[in-house]
Length: 184
Image 1 (cartoon, helix red, strand yellow):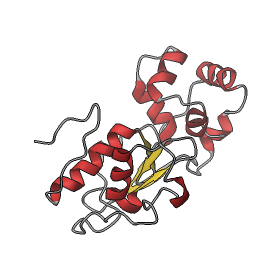
Image 2 (cartoon, rainbow, N blue to C red):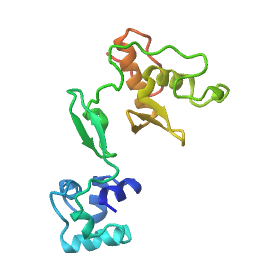
Image 3 (cartoon, rainbow, N blue to C red):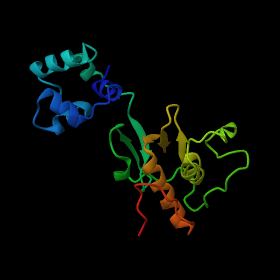
Image 4 (cartoon, rainbow, N blue to C red):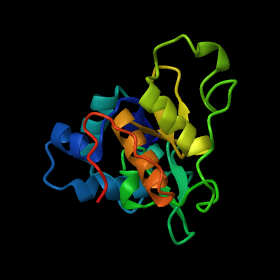
């Protein structure tokens, strides 16, 4: 198993791994993940002990990329490969749909990503349903009451922020939601 895949499965970031291993620099961990460097033998023993033997030295020599990597398209149309713990806002991904299309109106059978038979279910709340409708195919619900945007896990606040950005472009009323400030 690759170190990045183990970190993703255990919800550990490079910063967290750095603290666990007692290292000074987070960039060393990033160099291990990118394949630029291999850990020293004493550090490799710590990694093997931490992962329970799931990550070994041969995993660092394996040229295949980790399974947890995701491809996104940035605002300039370039494909970027990012780790699950990287923040998508820094990459400013381009909209999956045409940016000039107006947000979709609500479908009478139910929002685009919420099953039609869940109309009596109070979750997601009306503001979140409106955000899902606004973002169309870019946003979806996960099985454990979470959200994804462009294939990446996000929280409800970021979902509403992105929906408000789209709505502001078309002069539509913004979605009020706790913790979300008005756009300027």
